Length: 500
Picture (cartoon, rainbow, N blue to C red):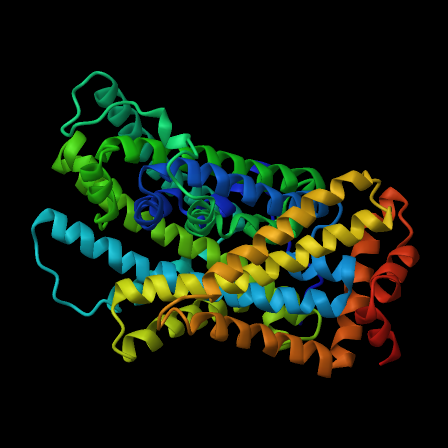
């Protein structure tokens, strides 16, 4: 029997934020994403991440604004569905589902990548197949996610928090030793790493794509809207706080890493040629033991990110099934924990199946990690675009009381998303040249379902409006006016839905 909503003890804002921060995995992101940037822009890595921070804030604006008005387990699915129509919501939700499942496959594989790095750092050998650790991690993920959401968010806080603390300690040690002349390489506190001089704008903007990857999944806490206390205040705070906190961490750590390797040509080459910048710098500035701790922590953070992505995927599967897309069994929640148990299990198994598919195809763990991450981000850009368009439509409608001049923010955000997709899609070599087509095909499947299944779109539209009107009863909102916006005034999505 399906349930109308996810119940259980309500989460606080910081607990919801833990899901987004756990999804982003700051230690995992900082370990790898700065390397590609240094290959493109040299010492200007911190500047690139500062620019990426601005771009992400433009996109996050739409989520912060809309989650202050709507709360739903479907995240993008509902935010777009309630602003520009149920079909657009379904397309965005379907794209986001692909993102979450692929990211979970990516982080399951990352568990193996970082564990192998830890083994190598320790001087041991590891001959077993790389897929064994993702299988074990998937089983443990199901165990964790079947418990109450509060248990999951607390676990993410402990794992992610430990990783952040270890990373920040390293950053502080690097800056201290560089500033006092004790660095193991020739380096000084060079603030020109934040300067535009010497680097072309094209290179800087192209490199922000790598920086953008660090924030991917910042919106995942929106999927906890039905499980959070006072969600219309807590979720925007959690979402915005996660973006800002991780942004500050990313910029600081990229500054520290750049100084740690040195801003000379030799230092830049060391950074660009690194396989795991964090662990290498830990060995250089603190010692092998600390590098081992960080390598193990990175594997733990990858596991925490798997918990986050599968938790978000399960809520989205639950929401879609509750509204008529997918087996009714996936819309059931456990009466004791309030968790959508069947959706949790299915989401994790699907993610593991993706990783297994790459393994069966003979792809290495490292390539599987990067390939699945790239395809996931391309799907994510489509999902983000639907929400960004949605907040623009919401501003134009005037119903939210948002000043019209704020329309410039989603317009800039949409332009940034388009640019990121363009950079990923044009001029790439195989196999990366295939990934935009794979992501596009997934999103087109979602679009095809939305277009050629009008009865489904009608059910989704009525269900979304019904849920939102129930949530707004105590605030005196007119659900009929909302139905008019989602079903006709904002384009053909709703109009065609009503004719079905």
